[in-house]
Image 1 (tube, one colour):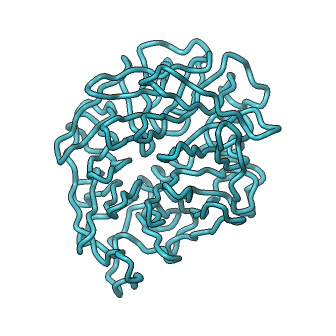
Image 2 (image 1 turned 30 degrees about the horizontal axis):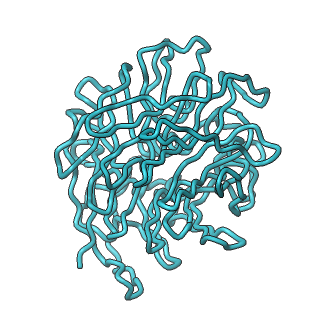
Image 3 (image 1 turned 120 degrees about the vertical axis):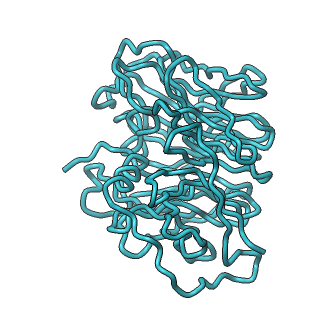
Length: 401
């Protein structure tokens, strides 16, 4: 059976259909004596009135960006400075979000938003097809946005309808992808227009196309570091999110794509974050049943800059899949492991060991379902499920010293 879901949507499905089990106490994990913590203190962040929120990015200063449902169940991008949420609003449509670690130390935030304009081509596009935003009927245009000093503005496309912004560095360079005006014969389903990776410089009113790997038609940039190194995916147009649009993981040196080693499958090779050394984490299909058909069977990976191979980080016991979401200057990786009876669980990977983050905190019976990002001080943000209320809330976990 061929699945068309994105990995983010797969995580959401597992979280909803498999009741998470409380983390079981066990031996304190052994970390090397290099500053890695043994335990964390956890706080949840205030929502915009709804029952669901998620932290997606955390700066070294502790600011958090992500999203929250409102009381009317619409989704809005949020910036937290402390516990208080700042509603970043939308570009005219009902929903917006920060879907990746799209926040820098200067308080600039990037993400995606529906606009008030209807899509005449009726494409699902990455925003809704990937589960990042609730779908509208009829479909509305989705654009990448840049928020700074209280002002929200749309980022330009490559001539097509939709856009998607993911990451930003402290120089104000923004990455993502955008549709072109040309139809792409490798598109499938309701996607029609081609798309390619983009590097925007909104404060300078400039944008640069980051072209695909030779022989491919589509590309998308997912993260950028302070050195201006961007990473992302290259492949077919396909469904405009994941799968065969991620035939290769790439790093752009200048505007030239260089392949990042993957775990050996044919699809879903997706970098999610890059640190200042150029180390990368993300997820990738290993060889296995279903891979050739585009099934999501991915594991989290770690690639040390310059290495010939990527390291498979595996999964937590009982799970089938995992995704690396964030990496800090120490090379610590955080992410989510899922696909088993325990539901989605946050992990931290350090010096070759993947640990259930729930084993390092005192939140039971509540569950840390995903870890989305980690800063250089080791603070982690993601989503926590309150078992008693059913709420899923953004959290910050701070290491004890």
